[in-house]
Length: 410
Length: 204
Image: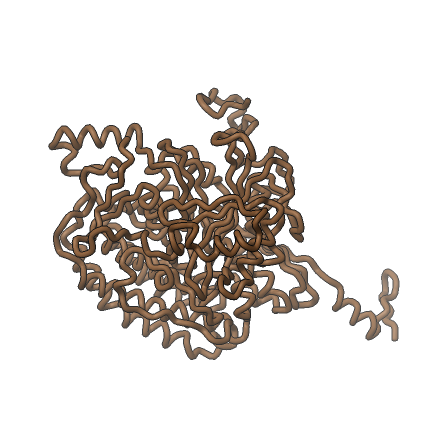
């Protein structure tokens, strides 16, 4: 059968020709400014029709050389840089770095400060999960979710603002505790948030958990087998969604997580929907942890170590006593020198295991700062998940890994 | 500055430190099961084991690195099945030879224990790749290649990870790489930039 076209050569239309056309591969650039890549990431997709044959994420559009910068700043000067890696959960990044430096120096913050660190870390996890839920649902098509999630995130950011004055890049944690007093209204704000949030979360679940569109876009999509999840070094909800029980807070507790009662939710099928359920349950457990912290927390007591050369003196004393003013001067101008050695401190970030590997050569500047960011490692599983999936699922797969490009590219 | 330890632990448990949770195994190398197993299995590859802040670091010879890590992963009594991190350290200012260290952070999910394995090597030595053991080493090794110029032998796809593919100005995390790079970058619209003060990190 042939078709005559008035101009040009006649085109042969046959079944064979149609089949070869559909088998022909097409390379599609997704990004770097695609809205569903959550920043600037490029994914080079090789397509056969609408099926993905190969997927190659291209990173580095937000690379700022954070590790190199860490090797040229003093220990305390690097804390603001950790905010700018994963900027939706900045207190968690501060926490991991500060714990690594404290371990290197061999100091430990007082009990009250440690409880406040846990509260802020869990609030950061909630804020990060809310951004994830809003944007993930937005990518798949549930537009209204982002409005609700960002509404509740405002409450958390208000708490951060009351605590430290900043909302996004908090620079909140300090070596050896907190040098400024806790604002009076803060415990009430945290309690109020814990009371109001479970109702809000129930709202989200009425919108999503049994929504047929949500189910059809997430169930059976992006399945990761448990063996593959371990082999790909996945951590966080990506690993637990496949049924592997590894939560740094439970497995190798830091801070006072060994005093808390909480459960680690696990998935069974390892698909996008299971990871969604795992993160939703994590939010409930976080609220429970915050409430336990607020109950167990001593109401007064020291907030920071005194007399330690590694710790900045309390803010109020700097202007009152000569010794503290001198120590403050030395701490800011010269910094402090931890002993020679190396430490690796892992914490459970909202996205997985966040590890800081520090090498000290005994000078005030770290010799090597290594950030093991969870989403960089987790993103490796994207080609594994995307192979054989449909093109439209790529946005669901990127969303389910929960990436922040500042943290991936560093 | 004073190097003695300042512990400010909670009053109810004196001496307990937050980081002293025992998840790096015994603090004495002679009692550590993984260190002992590696010493028995690979007597010629074992170099030493160092403990700092309860963290155990096992140093092995470079050619045996993959065998040692594979043994640590597969041995039924050790089972370090999760590769937490793989990175490198340029030891240029700390020692003469060998120049680099490759650092592998392992974690055992069933045993809840960490271990750090290191191996030293010089510029240009091929490092055995961990990709046959852990798929997750792929991007971590690409990043180490990108930042340090380390060639991983047996890596399926060794390309630059974070820097552009056509980046021809070396590997920035090396200690002899200047902080601001080798070139003067001229911003568009500022063809005659004010001279920048460069005190340290001048190009050698």
